[in-house]
Image (cartoon, rainbow, N blue to C red; front, top):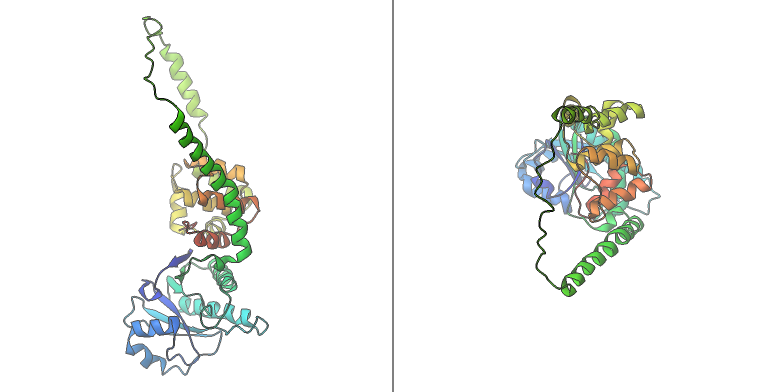
Length: 339
């Protein structure tokens, strides 16, 4: 765990295995395939010649050679022919067989390109959806860190309609409100005359009021007894209320098991805002409950922050799919949930 989308050169990824979007011959080609072969060196081509090619939807594994990974998993994606020629099932199989090979070779981390989305013509939004669904399903029962590596952050990755809806939602709550406020403050600063502060003398010279120390001590003890539950306590309570196991919760939150263990073992653990929101999404909390959980971690949602507005959008729509949320955050160049 977990699943991350990153902008990077896949040949630079320091993981146990990278996945090559290969052609059926496995002998190199254009795009990602050509880049991987050039970076790995001639040893890779020599080994690939012994593999006898690869069928569409299947995968084969080689050494990493000059790359900073131990293995290269070669998979052949489908060519897009309109969507009526079993393309989706074949693309899903690429991810499934590649992940099975990664598991068989004891890989703890693997990096994928967006298979078939280049010269094979698979629509990027649909290709990304297949990748997220298959990898997400795999990670629900396996411990592995999986990366989707792309150079793109363009909006078309998440679909034009969804991007437009969220852009409009942000515009309604962020641009108008905060641009107008900034303009109003600037206007007031321009037209409000400056004046020296008026010095107000003390009302009297009376001695400070005596304080009953015993009463003050009792009051403090009472306040401490009434102190609100911590983030960790609320998280564990909500897990029980939702009928989830710990594993189900941290996997839904796209959070590493080790981090969850820290939170469970330390009642005063202070998570990052990203982690707190990830758990709110995993628990499918309402907006009010999410705000409450964030307050316990020392944070709040704000309409001056695009990230926060995107989170609010998904919660208000009742969409708690953390992978889809991360797709949108990625497209809007925001930090992703989980770790």
